[in-house]
Image (tube, rainbow, N blue to C red):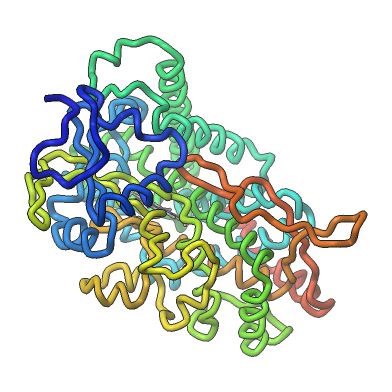
Length: 508
Ligand code: HEM
C-alpha cells in the first residue's frame, strides 16, 4: 500500500495511506526535527512519502556502516525532477553515480586537493583574504554579509576561471547571487509539488514551474557567458594558471570525452562556485558571531597567535601547525551551526540490511548533519559553542573524515559538516583553508566584540539562535564591533594589503 512503511524497515513516525509521513515533514526546521525523531525512534529510523522510502541513520555507527563501509552502493543521488529539469542533468552534485559523475569528481579532487592548494595556489588564497578582511573592516564593517561572500566567491572564481571578483557592485557578483537565491529557493523542502512521488503533478501549472524555467535560463546563460569570456581570452592568446584553462588545454590536445557536452563542461565549473561560495561564507559569518559572543575563546586564540607571529606579520596558512586553536574554532563552528544541516540526500541502489532492518533499494538516505552534531551523548552540552572540544584533534577535517575506524572517529569527535562517504564534499580543503585564514587574520588584527548601545554604553547581546531556516542556514543579519589591537597591527595590514592588491591585479 502506497505511503505505508514496509515490514522490517526501521521504525518511524506513523504513516497515513498514500501520503505516508508527507504531512509531518516540516517545510522549515527539518534539521532539528531529525534530532527529535532520533531521540524518539533511535539511531536509525525511516519515513515514507508516497512510494519513496527515506532512511535516516542517526548515529556514527550507522553512518559508518552504511555510507562509509558500503559506499559502493550508498553513493548515488535520488532523482529530483525539478533540479534535473533546471540543470538538464548536468550537475555533479545531483548526478547519479556513473562515468560522468566519476570523471567530474576526479576533475574537482585533482584541482582542489591540499597539495595543489598549498603549493600551486597558495598566494591567491592568501592575497584575496588579506584584501577582503581589510575591505570588510575598514570600508564596510556593516556589510559583513556581502564581503564574506565576495571573499569566498572571488577565491573560487580566481582558481577556477582565472577571474577575480573585485567588488560587490560588479555584474558578476550580482548575477551570481541572483542565481543562487532562486536556485536555493527552489530546492527548499516543499518548494515544488512532490513530482517524483506523484509524477502526474508535473503537469500542474503554477509559480513553481515559472521559477524553474527562470532558474534554468539564468543558469544556462550565466555559465555559457563565463565560458565565452574564457574562449575570447584564449583566442587572444591569453592563458591563465586556472582550472578551466588547464582542462581546455587537455581536452584540446587529447580530444573531448564523448559524454562531456559543452553544456556539461560549462555547468561543472559554475557549479563549483555554487557549492563553494555561500556555504563557506555562511560558516565564516557563524564564526564571527561566535567570536564576539564568546570572547574568552577569542582571547585564547589571540594569545596563541601573538606568541607565534608577534605584531610584525599576520598569520598565514603555513602557520597551521603552530596555531592549532584556530583549527579548533573552525571545527566547532562547523559542528555548532552546520550550514547544510540536513546534508544532501544519498540514494542506495540495492536492497540492504542493517541490524536486522530492511533498507529497500532506491531509498533516499539522509546524513542528518545538525542532528548528529547535537547528540548530547557525543557532544556534552551540544548547544554551547566550545572549541576546547577539539583541543586534542589538531588535524584538518579531511584527515579525520576518511578514518576507517568510526570509533576512532568518535574519539576525535570529528564533525559531519561536509557530509559522509563517497559523496563527501570535495571542496572541503578549500573551505577549511578559507575559514582558517580569515579567522586568523581578523583576530590577529582586531578584537571582535558585541556591539555597544550608544545610549547606555552597554553591549548589546548577540542572539546565537537567530539563524535563517533555509536549506543553507546562516546567521540573521547582526553587527559586531571591530577594534584594532594596535597601530602597529594596522600598519602591517596596510603594508600587506598593498602587496596583495598588486599580486591580485594579475587576475582582474
Ligand atoms: C564550509 C563550506 C562547505 C560546506 C559546509 C560544504 C558542505 C557540503 C556537503 C554537506 C555536501 C554533501 C555531501 C554528501 O553528499 O554527503 C557537499 C557536497 C559538495 N561540495 Fe561542499 N561544502 C563546502 C564548501 C565547498 C567548496 C568550497 C566547494 C568547491 C569549490 C564545494 C563543492 C562541493 C561539491 C562539488 C559537492 C558535491 C559532491 C558530490 O556529489 O560528489 N563545497 N558539500
